[in-house]
Image 1 (cartoon, one colour):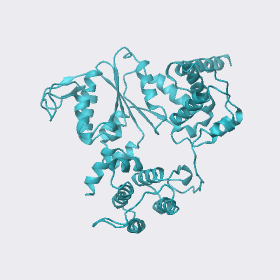
Image 2 (cartoon, rainbow, N blue to C red):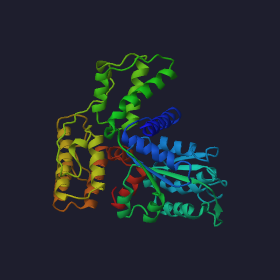
Image 3 (cartoon, rainbow, N blue to C red):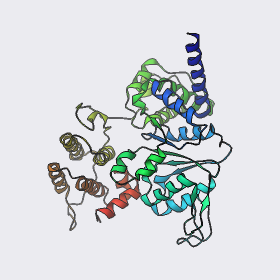
Image 4 (cartoon, helix red, strand yellow):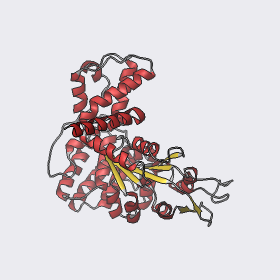
Length: 409
């Protein structure tokens, strides 16, 4: 018994160190497993793939992996692959010679050279173009790379940590991600569950964020009521830990560290109109759809279409439900986008788009449905590709590629 108690105590001490040093907070089984794997793999040079929804703390884990490794005195370079235009990503990662492309007026080092002997964190690696994936695989296998515009090979010693909120195995099956690179990246996988799957960590997270915010603003945090905590534990938290942190930091700052009651908390919580409709056979349950006019419907629709698998009949029901929610909401005049009364030549009206969407249910062809979703987003935003990408929940780069693929104007 003494040995078991000693192990538990040691485990809690380690978790406390991770909390104090890196802000990794949680004592649930899910978090304990993720933190244990972090501690096991950190001292090694193994490539690590961190997966999980947006806001679950993937970059925090990546930084901890570096700081707990033998490379901690060398650089840690963080790169968001989805935020760099496709045409520039390769030169940003591997560098470029003078004259390699228009505007390349001098030789420049890439992120891999800058991270030599340290670690490089590639966030949103699922957004990386296939051509760049080939070069990444080469550097993982041999440590060799060439700057853009050069045929001379160079070597670096870099540990790679990657992260994604996408299902890379699904992208492999769709031909969007190289299988050999996927297996090379997935040497060790640390999967971070969404906050709603380990809500018992919310009290500890609230205390951590509140106390840190109070200290930063020279305030005295006066605690939180159990009823307020219960409310927080029952929310879906689609933005995960990041969303919870934002709520607590805003509340503590504006209320000057005041004791958090249920009534006080309600003024800072996101407003939702969720009315769950459970169907255990559905691929996507309607209770998992966080309904917000305009944005959430389009994002859920698009991501659902990209991840189609399993029961086709249930997916038809989900598609019809999402479409009906979108256009019923517009019909009620809430958050609708003004539309021109005249339809330009070659453009579909909203009614025609709904009709074409319904006709897709006969065969549920992925390409046709994806095209309709993009057309709907572009029409709703009056052609603004940036806003359309936001509605669909994808990067502008991905949207431009899809527009070219489907020959949309």
